[in-house]
Length: 504
Image (tube, rainbow, N blue to C red; front, side, top):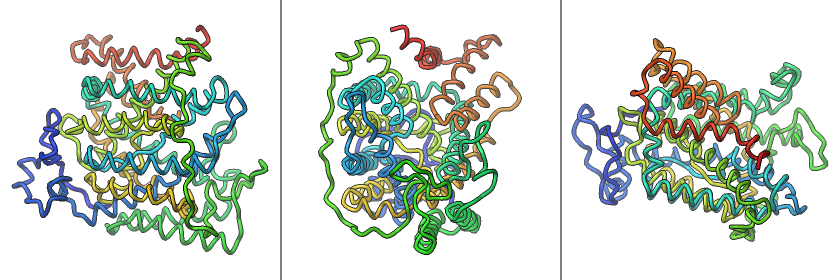
C-alpha cells in the first residue's frame, strides 16, 4: 500500500482561511510542528502534511493520467444533436474541456490547497445531454448550468453549503467513502469492459468470459498495480498506468484491434473501449476554443417556462452539490485529511472553487465542472496538498495543445488504478457502527446505491432520507441535525422530479 500519513487537522470546525495561515496544523500526537523548507512548502503545507515535493508531483501526474479520459469522453457524450438539430463540435468540446479542467484545477490547488482535481462532471454531463436532446437547445441548457453554479456559489458564500457538509453524521460520511470505493471499482471494471450490460443486468466480459486483448491488458495492469502497491513501491499507480499503456500500444500495433464502437455505428465487442492506444500522426495542434461563452442565461425559461426550467436547475444542483460532498469526504478520508468529526478542515475555499467551476463549465459549453473522485488515485500515490492539483492542472493546460497525445492512454490502462483505489477506500468500513440498525440501514443503502445506480447523489439521498426516518421512529429526533431534515426534504423532491416535471 502506498505510504500513509498521519491525520493533519486539529479537529473541529474549519481553520483560519487567511493566505498566511498554513492549511493544516499537526495534532499534538504527531509531535512538534515541522519547519517549512521554503515559501512553497509554507503556503501549501507540504511538510505539515508529512509530504514532499516529489510525492506531490507524482500524485499530480497519477491523477492526470487517471482522469485524462474526460478530454475524449466528454465530447462523445455532448456531441449529440439538440432539439434544434444542432451538434456541438467534437474538437472544440475536447479543447475547452481540457482548458477549463486545467484552469480550475490549478485554482483549486492554489486557493483550496488540497489535492482535488476539477473537470466536467460525469453523470451531470449525461443529464445535460438528455435535456438537450429532449427539451432545450445547447446554449439554453448551458445557461441553466451557469445559473445552477451561481446559485451554489451563493450557498457557499452564505455558509449554507459548508453547514450542510458538517451536518451529515459521521456514520453517513464513512458510508459515503466506502460507497465511492465500490463506485470507483464499478467504473474501472466497466471502463475496461470486464463488466458489461447483459441479461438480466450485467455480464462478465463477453458471454461470461474474458475475451479480447483489451481485457488481457487490463488484467495485466491490475495485477501489476496490485503487486506494486503491496510491495509499497513509490508511484505504484503511476507506474502501473505507464507500463500498461506501453503494453497496450504494442498490442494494438501487432493485433490492430481497433475501437469497440466504429464511426459507422458498428460494434467490435473485443475492441478498445474508448481510446485506441496508437501513436498519433500529429502530436501538437491548435485548440478550438469557439465554444467559450456560447450560452443563453434565460433562453431555457423562454422555451419551456419558469417552473420547468427551475426544476432542471434544481436537479443539476442537487447532483452537483452532493457529488462534491461525497468526493471531498472520500478523497479526504483516503488521505487522512479529515478531522475527528469526518469533516474537511478549511473546506470553505474548496467548496467555493467547486461552485465557481460549475458556472464556468456552463459558460464554456462543456457542462458543469466539479471536484473529481479520480483525485483519490493521486492521493493514494502520495499527494496531500494543492501542489499536486497545480501539477494536474498544468498537464490539462498542456493537453489543450497535445490532445492527440492524451488520447494514447486507453481506459483499459487507467482503469486498474480506479479498482486499486476502490480497494483502498473500502477500508474505511471499519469505522462504521454495526450494533444499531437505525445507523446500519442508512449506511448500507448509501454504500449499495452508489455503484448499483451509478450515482453518488442517489446513494447519499437514500442514506439521508432513511437516516432521518429511522432516527425519528426510534424516538431519537434530537440526535438529528435540523439541516438533515431540510436535506431529506430536498432529496424527496429530487427523487420525485419526473412526476413533478410531467405535472408542470
